[in-house]
Structure formats: structure tokens, C-alpha cells
Image (cartoon, rainbow, N blue to C red):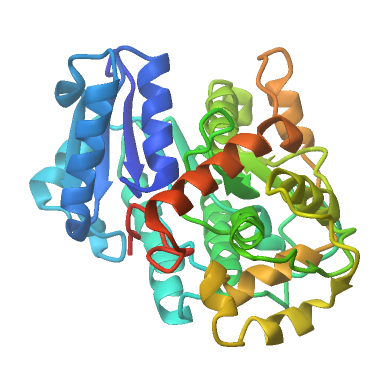
Length: 375
């Protein structure tokens, strides 16, 4: 048995994978890592590791981190026989983050990565003799269009999803739950992940950033979408990785699902008003229905202004409340808590302003991944 932790992380150099790696390095001086990187992401992965080396106090990162190039859509994740034997024989913890996150992705690609890819990662993990933990990053939105209180242990049949992302993340969680009788599974369900609560750093402009970009760039205050009473559940990325680290540090978390969400989310109107104040705009006096907003976003120029994704508008009128009982119990006594939106909205807005000042417009990147998108 290895005397140190050996972790296998899929989805590097995606945003959450980079943050998870950084957190693990900070909390365990002896842990070693295998990072699964898609061949198309080689340059970006090298850049991310170079940045990590430049900003870290650890001088032995290259000795502790091994990159293996592969594709979760392939059997054995596209690794060579030697790589399969090496990784399988040494890894004790698997963190599965590789996924298609775009709300507008076509269903075929979403199924290939999120569903079939997850099945391949599960099969790969079953061959690991020293496996102690399999952490699957799912999504709070596997509940689809359900409303009301959503419990962590629930995964009821859902007949209506907003987009292929939700549908395929639901299907992938079904696969992971079925494998839980043979694998030490822990399921993580984040809600809408935003930037670092201390710096504002983010990988793509979506979710609350649509509001910020509209309010910063528009000469007038755009109307609120929907009634504004639905909760907008946002979590900073630093809270997500801190919470995950605390959760997986306890063996009692095996076999459980955790909503990594804001336990007290603000309604959409409160979020909109907070951003409007920071943008120096008057508060909106009226709102427009979601379906009307989607029509307006098709007008030439308006969609370019903020590169708003039509599918994202649906989340501004979603009366779902994600119960986080398991997560709150796991975090009790750790000092890890989800900061309130008002505590970090200023740094999110500053990040938006800085990006706007540097690029001059939003059409360069819009809602795409600033670091590129992992297929």
C-alpha cells in the first residue's frame, strides 16, 4: 500500500480541476497526482502548470504531478497499456471533473462526454486495487425543472430538462449511483459556480456575469428578467474546493451526495439590485417575463452586448431550493462556510470591469471559457 495519497483528476486544466489541484497541494505536502489531459489541451495544461509553479512555494511540483494524455470518451480513457497499469496500480482517489458544461452544447457531444465518458471513468476505477474514494462532480441542476425543496439524496426520475447539460449530468449521476455498491462513491453537486470570493477570478462569463456585463456596458438599466423572487444559487469557486476538501476528509462521506450550494441564496431581484448599485445604475422599476427576454435577446446588437446565452435565462426564474443538510453537517466545526453574495459581489464586479477595460467589448470571449473549453 502506498504511504502517500495518489490522486487521479480528470478534466485538467478546467477551472475547478485547477482549483482542486491547488487546494490538494496546499493541504498535503506528500500527495502525488495524475492529471488526465485531453491531447488538444496540452499547451493549455503546460501553461497552467507553469503558472502554478511560478505562484507556489512548492519546488517539487513536477516530481509530484504526472500528466497523462487521454480522452474519457475512449476505452481505458485512451491510455496506453503501460499507462493503464501504472495509474491503476498506484491511484487511491479518483476525482472525476471532466464534462461538457456549455448549456448550448449539442446533445450528441454532451452524451458522449458526460454519460459515456463517465461510464468509461467508472470502468477504469473498478480496476484500481487500492481505490479508497471515487468523487464524482455532478450538478445541483440534475433536478431539471423540478421546483420546491430538492434533497441531496434524491435523484427522482426527471421528465423535463432545460438543456442537454442537465439531462446528461442527470444520466451520469444515475450511472455513478448504480456503481456505488462496488465503488466508494461520493457525489458533489455544486450550484452556479462564480469567481474567487477574494479576487473574482473566473474561467467563463455566465450566470451572474450576464447581469454584470449588461449593467456595466448598457447605457440604460435593462429590466429584470422574471418576477425576481426565485432564488439565484451562487457559490464562489474557493468555497467549492474548500467544502469538497472538508467533505472528502471524512470517511463518513462515502456513499453520500452533497449539495455544495449557498444555504441562504438571495432572490434574483436582490442579486440584480446589488450588481446595479455597483454598476452605478438606477434600480430597475419593472421586469419582463422570461419568454419576452428571450425574444428581446434576438435583436441585433443586444445579444452581442453581453453574449447572453438564451438557455441561461431560464435559471433566473427557477423556484428550486437545494437542501444542503449533508454538506452543512460535514462542514460543522471546520470553519468552512459559504460567504454571502454581498460579501464578494464587489470583487466579481471589479473583475468584470477589468476585463471590459482590457478588451473594450464582450464579443471576444463572451460566455466561452476564457482558458478554452475541454471537449
